[in-house]
Each structure stands twice: as structure tokens, then as C-alpha cells.
Image (cartoon, rainbow, N blue to C red; front, top):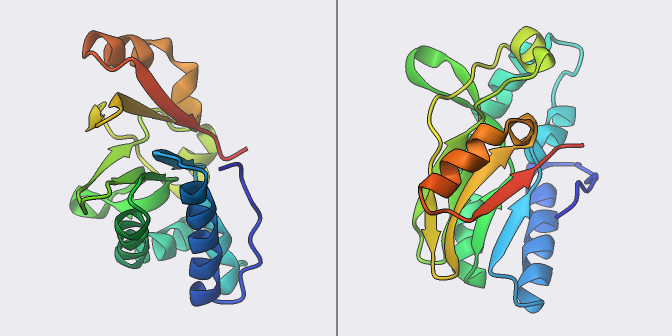
Amino acid sequence: VEQLLLLVVGPQFAAHQVEGLVATAADYGVQLLVFPEYFTAQLLTLGNTRRPMAEQALDLAHQVPRFQELMRDLALRFRLYIVAGSIPSLGDAGVLHNDSFVFGPDGDSSWQGKLHMTRWEREEWKIQPRRRLRIFTAPFGRFAISICYDAEFPELARAAARRRSPRTAARSGS
């Protein structure tokens, strides 16, 4: 899915728009649907956009459970794998990370954290990198996820290939 600017008039309306994208992909027989980095950032427009970006990122992190529920339900209902873009999420000790959640048609879920932060993410959003590359397994094969700037670092693709993951789902927010 290319970045689609959603008209966000409320969380429920945005959920209906995402459901429409997933339904369309399922109609085409898609097995793995990949949304872009910071796909959820448009939800920031529902709040006070004049606050510091770090506060706004923290607000998005508090939406993670609702976001996970929506994407898990869509993966189950439409019987496909969804790489749900990325969203700021809280890690250990309240540290913010940029995580991409993966949902399967059986209800399973996992996540991949962004490993290389941009200066903007570090300085403005106060987001810290994760440290581990995960490999996901599906009936169509194994795959890894590179989140935006991570794709600029070939060692991640080499590490995935060494772990017998010939496919990498890479999504950029731009």
C-alpha cells in the first residue's frame, strides 16, 4: 500500500478506511499486505498538533493496543498477513521505539522494531532504535522487515539472507 493520506475525522472513520484497503487487497488475492512507516501518524491531527512532537509520539504510543486489535481483526477476517506499517510504541522503561507489527490470518502477531533512527526521529520524536532483526515465517516463505531508513543499510539484508530469509518487506513513509 502506498502512503494514502486519509481524511481523519475520527478514529472509527480511519478504521473504516483501513478496512477498505485491506478488503481491496484481499479481493486481489494478496497474501502479504505491507503498509508504510508511520501509517498511523495521520491520527495526530485529532489532537493538539502544536505540542512538542515527542508528546504527540507518546500519544500515538498509547493507541497501540487499539491499533493492534484493528489490524489483528482485519488479518483474521480477510485471511492474509499484514505488516501494519509502523507506530511509536513504548518499550522497556517507557522508551519510545518505532515498531512495525505483523499479523497473521491465524491471529498470531509479532513485531519488528526500526534499527536505524533518522536524526528527526531521535531529536524531535525522542525515538530510540531497537537492536534485533526478526525473521517471520508464512506459508509463502520467510521474510524480514526493513523500516524506511533501515533499507539503506545492506547488512540487514545480508543478515536476513544468512538466516534463510530471501524476502525483505521494506516500507518507507515517503
